[in-house]
Length: 341
Image (tube, rainbow, N blue to C red; front, side, top):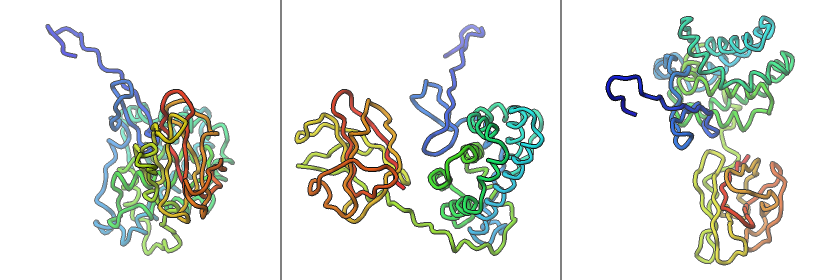
């Protein structure tokens, strides 16, 4: 609002902060969550983003760059393990974790700047810090086995650019792969928070540390298990059954619609173009509208896709499907996010 007469009458807008569930990045809103923009004043704003590592000659290949990044993750893990031994309180541990992040992204801050960054970053890590501190050092250390570290390396290799750096879209894909592939647990929560706090700028700094040469990423399988573009809305008797509002690397956000040939008011049916082209739904998040999980059906892989085959309930994370049908019997319309493995 405008100030008149030179008085101190301006009321700053209330700022709301969140982690974007699809990109993992901190965002802020000044209109109560109607619109979101990248959060200002966080760690990303003080990280010096280098020339892409392959372009600059720091790394010979994108595999070298990805291995550099994985090596800096090891630096972070080791520092956090040390923090368990030196911290007396959760707050001391939290500050130590932030300093471990700074070490991983090769960033040194003055005390005054560090205080401001602490205020911006630590609340974003709050739940994960509490969970990791409560679980203890042994649980944190045991999480980081060779398989988990290999998954992080391959997630980086499969998403980083040939120039040894990430674009915003490639960083989001890297974050999503880590989110989908790493085992659940407090350590994973904290690691994803680490990535969210440093963003594209931070992982590019990690990829340009120059630690690796002649790295080997031949064991990384970069093919996705489910091609999300294969899924589309089914049109029945000339009318689409629902709509797709958004499409990500392995997820869709769908919205119900009414259909003259269905007895229930709100429906969505998504389908692949072939009976044998299938994916495994690993989660469904109902975003708006009351719902019943019983109103979620699928057609097994290989069976005739609807309407040639009856639909039935399925086991999340197990069933391989070529058709998924959402239904809501009454009340307001719904939106839902379905993620495939």
